[in-house]
Image (cartoon, rainbow, N blue to C red; front, top):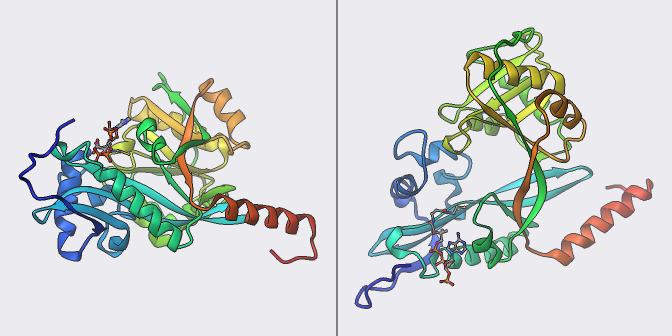
Length: 307
Ligand SMILES: CC(C)(COP(=O)(O)OP(=O)(O)OC[C@H]1O[C@@H](n2cnc3c(N)ncnc32)[C@H](O)[C@@H]1OP(=O)(O)O)[C@@H](O)C(=O)NCCC(=O)NCCS
């Protein structure tokens, strides 16, 4: 761990990003994380790292240069009969020579404080740094199953296979919303996410009414990973196998354990999965959230009550 010399001015912040700092932020994040387009980290995370989300991009600076950052995007999570307001945390980073000074912890604490004010139910992030986040009140939650797909010697092209792009996104959005658990999206959000550089989108089925789609390589973090899919499980599995065959590469398909309708099919086609925690979660207001869950359950048991 390195500390700053004592004659250096203390860092400033945490505070929200100002408009003129956006370009510097992208460059700063590009020096810490892999990106699919050099120096343009925002292209990989277009729904979080963009100027319109500045209120949720918090930084610490030293001599007016960004030295630490953590971001959040606020989304609605459709969770069966109820919606949760979720703060999705990401791009947590501190410049090498400023690590161990408490900067990331202070930004994450500030974001949590703002989340309380904004009525956010839970904060969620994906990270291997369990110990670091545990100290800040994050706990592993949910289970994600990872299926490995080796490129087969031969695979039949699925009927109505569409490649390459453009693929009409509206029917894909309809397939996406069939998941019981998922972030609510509109078409513009769907377009932003599927336009991330290097993203591979494939679908099959009748033109204009696909029965399944898969999305691989969504940003540098998800190269060779299929992290999004929708539609008929057999057709999803066939698209995945054919993509592995056509591009002769190993793919990893992610499925939350809540996808009970698809899991038996994935297991029979790809073999047993490896289980991982789905995310690290921090409940902003556990008591309030429990009360809402109980209320929703009570309403479900009493059909005379509107939800
Ligand atoms: C992880 C990271 C953001 C921490 O930033 P930071 O500003 O140094 O963090 P803080 O100073 O607030 O906290 C540092 C403390 O966490 C601990 N810590 C840092 N990384 C840790 C890890 N992986 N596991 C456990 N503890 C960790 C440090 O030892 C230190 O503990 P101490 O205060 O008892 O000495 C920084 O190391 C970084 O930018 N890493 C590269 C990018 C990255 O991996 N980001 C997280 C992606 S989700």
